[in-house]
Length: 249
Image 1 (cartoon, rainbow, N blue to C red):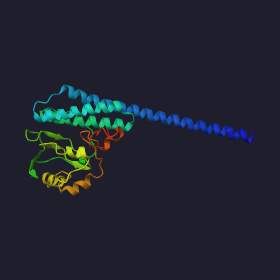
Image 2 (image 1 turned 135 degrees about the vertical axis):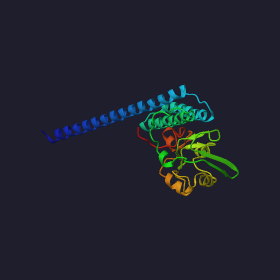
Image 3 (image 1 turned 180 degrees about the horizontal axis):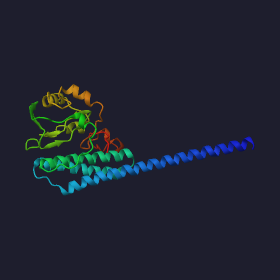
Image 4 (image 1 turned 30 degrees about the vertical axis):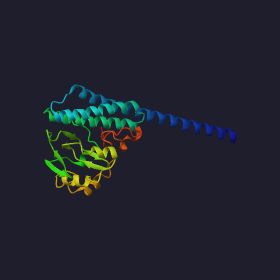
């Protein structure tokens, strides 16, 4: 066999091997995408069932269900545009976040909260409000509580907001929302965090804003209410998908 023929045969083998590798790789990516889509739809459908069938009976549960409904709407919109596994993961995050609000609503109504949910990245690290707090910062009153009530009807499942961990708990108002919209905390945030969480056991900010900031720097600064955080990048920034990074299902 001449050298030329040998080279041609080798070239054909190399091209064929490359084509086969590329085809297998594409097939693997497609399977991963389909699996991610199925997983995202499962969480969206689960959230939808709760939103459609559960109605709040008091201010706290009604507010929590309103937040859950908002996540359901956002997750559905994200699902329609999801074209990558990362985008599907963000859909799942949004839906699971909505289910945390459903659990909060059920708790506020004295119902069984239901099965445990995946721990969202940054949630456990942010800690939990462990005691009643009433503070006044720059002339404005704020309250935090481990329990829902007429004075603390706004629930937050805990997580990283604009790079800072916000503890899970019930609050007098959603004071973290400006940071979601702006992507950064205002100058008054240091005073607020220090006043509200200083000395509180189990909270990342127990020792002050600076220590809590260091604890939260590793997280993604997402947009809990779809205010354009980092986690919405693959959707062009229109979807926040929550303040949470990846989690395991």
